[in-house]
Image 1: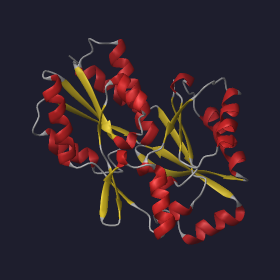
Image 2: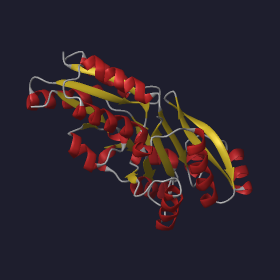
Image 3: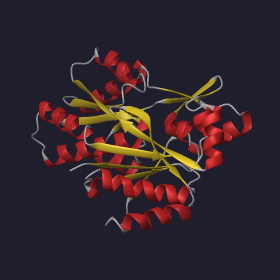
Image 4: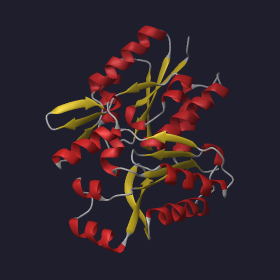
Length: 283
């Protein structure tokens, strides 16, 4: 019987390997194609891109509902009985999920909610590190676990590099003028995660390969990253050549065989095909 059971959203993009390894329970986020809504985990990134290519309309994302959380919390309690549910949330300033969980948790006495202030692989990194902490410290109290999560979330660094700005334009996150200017000047802007918000970061000029090379160099120069914590995320459309090139660049920084995660439909709606992201925890 588990003393602690970890819960997070499908938007964490946590891979099946780690979901099974740490027995993490996943609450679905949602993506709407017109009038039809689907669970994020039932979709592939390519479904998002195929829909946009056909309809020229960007699918809409939405957070988990109170009933989504109530279902998962109830299932956990039926399966494990006397346990403590630790819900590590997708950044609360980007989605309604945290508030939905708060509403659902009113019906349960054993649910602890923590805002990770992260999304996609940033959230995965926080969840995985928390699972490892509990594994290594099985007698930890709830208060100690909460403190641990709150500490590492402030040291988790995530930078995302879209290969195309078309989806950011379609979603109204950049203007048509900015989009055309970036295309003309071959500018690749990054997206950083800061205090839970996805914000515009440094802009690189050149081709996509030179941009992610500069991004990786800046990432290690700017942050004192624990290299064992490094995770990478790729969106459908990132070529094998780019993946190999990224891995060779990382080898120069002493990182061999990095862990790659596949981006789900939620983040793909914003990043577009072929995007790349890197996350790590500062020492």
